[in-house]
Image (tube, rainbow, N blue to C red; front, side, top):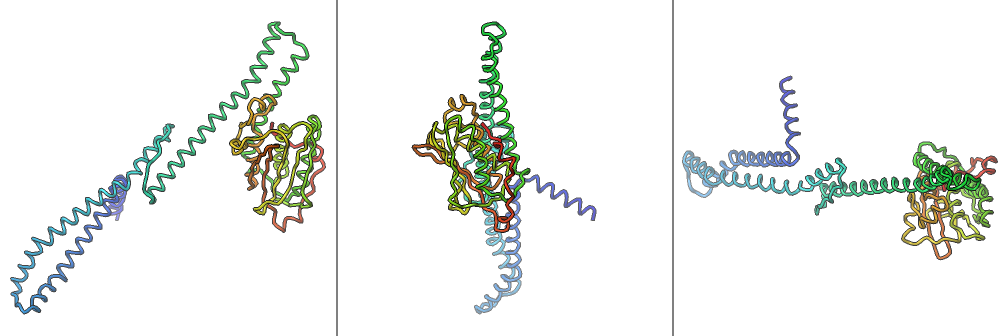
Length: 397
């Protein structure tokens, strides 16, 4: 038994080293060989007696020995060569068809090796619609996803470097000017340096908040929440910021008080970032409208609408991307790095919701939708804590 087990293990190793093409060819050759053996057996046990019976039925008595010799000669000269040629042709065609069918797999292997080495793979061309074609298309999709991730990584690196470089250069210029006596170390110059440092700190905090939002799924405390109360109290935390720009805010809900399952702090951060975005882009003296309403998909929608900057249609799909700015110079001058709405998307995704934006000739609307809580959770809504009402939620710039 030990020798048999070792022999079987050796066969398995040898079979694994053959490659898929030769495995398929070998299997088909075994099938062909089994078919040929079956034909020969049938000829020996069925065809030969049938031949003799046919000869007797035709009224032509045949000597058994002579009939056997005639039958064997006919089989040896006609049947066996025909069967052998047919088997050889079947094996050859099988080899050709298997080779053609597996051609995309060789391209898949080359593409995956190219991706493993860090190079950009060429698209795999496959006209087949079978499982091998599906594998080729899956590898193409993987290559496209890896390219998007690599492009995003480079973009994030470049954007972070750019955002850090501007305040650092400004701060370096101020310090060198005061050191060299070109400008006095006056309170005004120190205040400018202080503002640049605050911009650096704000960017670092934004990056930390984005990283924290991406990990939020594992650290959220989902509880039944009164969405209107959360929106109203979070919006009230921006009274000072709105007063500085002569803005006002209204919360509309048409008497509908939905309950959602969410993390109170995270959802307050979502609404806060949307309010912060609206305040930055609203025209002075206008009204920011925050509306809670049912959506067509039986979810609760929270939308924040401002009258101010218009978002071009080609930019709408990208405003939730990190570091994206419709007007880069304006956002940079106001201290924004284009991370606030990216945090909104991460946190809403973590709640199982969706985000979106619309824009017309008067301004822009940013919204998110949340699944409603089930009936059992509606009666267990926790009150909004007083300490949260007095302070604005954390929001990205």
